[in-house]
Amino acid sequence: MEYKIALIPGDGIGPEIVAEARKVLDKVCEKYSHKFSYTEVLLGGASIDAHGVPLTEEAIVQAKASDAVLMGSIGGDAKTSPWYKLEPSRRPEAGLLAIRKALNLFANLRPAYLYNELRDACPLRDEIIGDGFDMIIVRELTGGLYFGARKTTEENGVRTAVDTLSYNENEIRRIAIKAFEIARKRRNKVTSVDKANVLDSSRLWRSVVEDVAKDYPDVTLEHMLVDNCAMQLVRDPKQFDVILTENMFGDILSDEASMVTGSIGMLSSASLNETKLGLYEPSHGSAPDIAGQNKANPIATILSAAMMLRYSLDLDKEADAVEAAVQKVLTDGFRTGDIMSDGCKLVGTKEMGDLIADAIA
Ligand code: NAD
Image 1 (cartoon, rainbow, N blue to C red):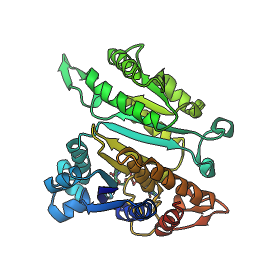
Image 2 (image 1 turned 90 degrees about the vertical axis):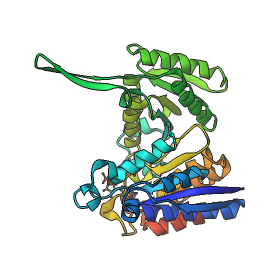
Image 3 (image 1 turned 180 degrees about the vertical axis):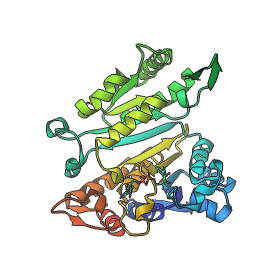
């Protein structure tokens, strides 16, 4: 099959890690007889340098015309980079927010998977880790408290601030459908997280999720209160497969879940819209402190490319092959500096990309 991929190298380590992900994708093409045509799209600091703005209309058109967008990371050192002397709406991060909005990305996916080889980086006790954990957080990205009406007033010298947490049933239904579809590609379990003992928005959330669940009799649904979920993530993370939740709860829980894996250079992510189009990127930033030194770990970006194969292109077998290649290289003892431990072999960004590409079976 033939697919159009928009590649956003971005800033800092972005171009280095995207080049390695492309190397792996090219190997997938070769092994599985696909054709990927790439369009390079400028975003963030790279776009400011070329066009004076962090995102151009042309870049949006290029992204929309593709089957999926694979991104490195954007931004520079806020203290030294000239990009941060610009007004906030012209800085690199504004470009990222604008492209997410232009593509209408409402579902954010953040996997938290613990490789047995990296269990020393996990802050949890050995008996809690057990055989490891493998979950994905599906977070609603465009509604809730972060987008509701807000105001601060002052009366008789006392200030009052109000934020509004609002969801309509359509917004809940579309993210719930995503979570159930994703569960079908995994272990068929959804844990929907809310605060239904207190919040009306959560009671609506729960009732719509239950409705959607009727169309997925093969997927087990359970509900969990958000405070309990925060505890369960560090008490027994193995119990989770897909965690479905609203914007603010997801913001907090996805950071907690990723921290229990302990390795920032390994964490992939995806943001999806109502079509198959998605934006895939590592969870980490552009790491200007190590940019251009062949030190960055490309695995989070390579695993983001695997998510792209699975969720935007429906190439599950190929996604499995990429994940298995990453697993093999770790089992063989190769590590970039950020995940290095005693007895392992230290490699750079390019060598790690070569090893993973060579391991695609
Ligand atoms: P960061 O994630 O870039 O770096 C934090 C630390 O982790 C640094 O020491 C870095 O060297 C290390 N690190 C990160 N990724 C690594 C990798 N793949 N391999 C090895 N080490 C890695 O966070 P920061 O320093 O706070 O931010 C730097 C820039 O990135 C800022 O401009 C910030 O706005 C931007 N940022 C962008 C995104 C994005 O593009 N989505 C996300 C977060 C931060």
